[in-house]
Image (cartoon, rainbow, N blue to C red):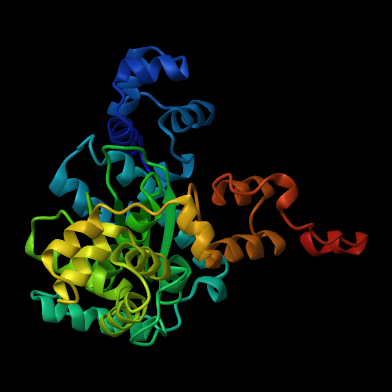
Length: 373
């Protein structure tokens, strides 16, 4: 933990409070301090005790250690350019915490989180549809996929190349996803409030940002973006999830035996995408005409479809989810007694109960002397 002066600590408390959408009076009520005391603490003219700081961190929803760590340069740049925008501050705050968690676990269990095939340099930003398709082909190669197969378990596949994807329910009227680059690799956060097809599309889009090394991105309403780079990364995401040869081949195969509706249901299930994404991809590949694409957008998969066709019902990126590599890193750090039980449970974001943690090995009495010099 770094030593910082009262002015720096106060400024970080103020910034965290404002990102949490609290004014000084509201924070003072939550931590049982006078508003003037909160004001003086933030100004650096009054010292704050460890217990008070713990209460402040809990009220704001951050870890106390975050006040003593320099934020990632990508976060500093983002906050400087965007200001304290309450619209995306929730994603900003969560990504900052996840980035700190991943970097901690990387330092303790590098073998679990060390990317094996991460590109040494970023790829060029795709500025055309053809460039987006080329980047998607490159990404599929990095993810060890051929040019036809569906991308199943996307979150754990992208972790192999250094992008650690988490999901949390951020509710409505907030971002679909966000990504931040780390010194090694990156972290994405996907809004699990959305349906699974949209969640996977959002993560595929974030993979594009990761591959072109965008320092920090928060994306709203994937596939409805206006900027050129966002539009081409939307194309990249569709090409990644719905490869041309695989989709065209499956559509032709299923269409020979089924109507349009049944064929769309089967293809969407196999590639694990939503109907809007399927329709748009089929149309841009000129597999179907506009009227057919418009019809596909109106289709909903029913329980009868699931039963009669034996469809897969994916739960990827559901509720709060963490990459398997990250979970393994936390558990290994706990087994090796590099972190406490409480710290392990905190890193695992309440996805584990206390009894879910592995037992620690019993210590021999003579091991006590290893700690005495």
